[in-house]
Image 1 (cartoon, rainbow, N blue to C red):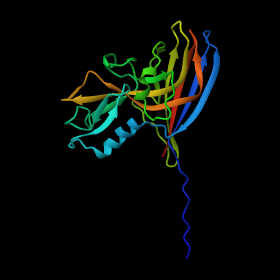
Image 2: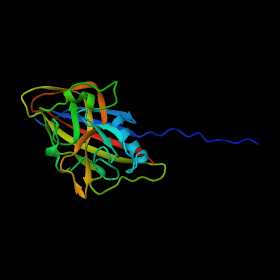
Image 3: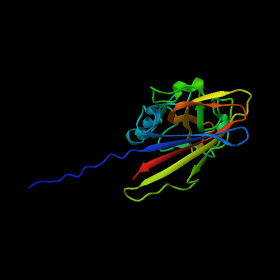
Length: 227
């Protein structure tokens, strides 16, 4: 008797990136698109891994770097207050972000003047974040209080988008970008006033983008999650 074993094709989480660059008059200068498989950073991996392996009673914790390279030990009440299940992540409408001690005071899609590769973390490129442009508030689809849905065997999608304008008199060269979230902790029933920022994805561009004065861009990252 023979047994036929079905061949299961691998299905990966994917991120599609679309960048629409606009001229000073608002017309479209170029559109750049790319696709990345399993694009998460080691710090995202550590946070995810820690949810399963470092319960709140366990001392120690899993080390996670913020965008500037500082180390925080998540999921450990003995090391700091980022202890499961009280730590929370935020991308839009995030409170208290002006208190965060970083070059940029809001989570979102950050632009960089240097590539990330061959490293899969964000904090090593902190000195090259582009701060001379205006970052507008990011948006998500679906919006707040909604959960992406898909049928069995289908694909759920989650999209984040942000508009960025060069309101300075300088020209910037964009070589890469990262998705940055704010991470909070609730301690004693209260939300701590100062979040930390953690890079969960980065994307190196095949060709750098020049952003001249009064020009702008809209960056959209769409995650495709197999179900």
